[in-house]
Image (cartoon, rainbow, N blue to C red; front, side, top):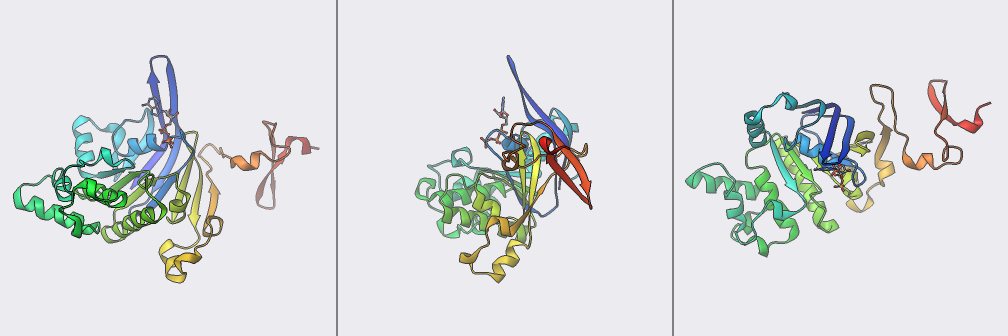
Length: 295
Ligand SMILES: Nc1ncnc2c1ncn2[C@@H]1O[C@H](COP(=O)(O)OP(=O)(O)OP(=O)(O)O)[C@@H](O)[C@H]1O
C-alpha cells in the first residue's frame, strides 16, 4: 500500500532550513494495521502529511496504492485526497462542529445528495458503534464518542488508507482502547490499511508492527511474535504480555548499510564519549566493540 524510499522533506523558512525527513525508508502492506512512534520532532506528522497528500516531499520516492505521489499535479492530488485517504486527528475541533448532531456532522462531508446521503451517514455511524447517538449534539458526546464520529467521517469516501495522528492523544486509557478496537475491527471488516502515529506505548503494544522514527529516518521496527488477535484469543485481557515479550525489536539497516543503535545502548561505558566503534564479524554475527577495546 505504501512505499517510501529515501524520502526527504526540508522545510524552508526565511532564515532557516529544517530537514524533517532525512532519507526515510518504509513499507506498509495492503490491509496492515501498524503504528509509527518516535520522539517529539522526529518527523512523524511530517511523514503522515506526505502520505495524506497534504504536503509534498522534497526528494525521494513515495508510492501509495500504486500511485506516484511526487508526480501528482494539483488535480490528481485533490482526487487522491478525496478517494484514497481518510484522516483522523487528535483534536476533534479539526474534524467536527460542536453545535451540530453526530448525524449532521457526518452528513456534511458525505458527497451524496438527499436521502441517500442520510442513509449513508447513518450507516457510517452504525459502523463505528454510534447508531444510538445519531441525534445527540457533538457537545453532548464523550471524547471517545466524538473520536468515533471523526472516524465515521474519515470513512465516508471509502478510503483504502486511514491515517490517524495521535487519535487517542486526548483520551483516557479505557476509551483509547475502545478507539483502537474500532480501528482493528474496521481494518478486519473493511480490509482498510491503518497507519497510526502515536506516543502511546499501550496502543503501540497492540498493533502487529511498530516503526520507530528517529531524526527523520526509520530507526527500528518492533514486530509482534504472534498477532494481537491470536494473543487475545489465548489470554485474558488482564494478562497481556509486556512490550518486550510481545514484540521483537529490529534495528533498521538502510540501503547504504547504515544503522541506528538504540539510544540506551550508547550510554554504556566505552561508547558514551566516543564517535568510533570497532566492527567485527564473528560466527555470523556483526559485533561492535568500544574504541578502547581495540587491541
Ligand atoms: N511547517 C513547518 N515549517 C518548519 N518546520 C517544520 C514544519 N513542520 C514541522 N517542522 C519541523 O520538522 C521537524 C519534524 O516535525 P514533526 O511535526 O513531523 O515531528 P513529530 O515527530 O510529529 O513531533 P510531535 O510528536 O511533537 O508532533 C521538527 O523539527 C519541526 O519543528
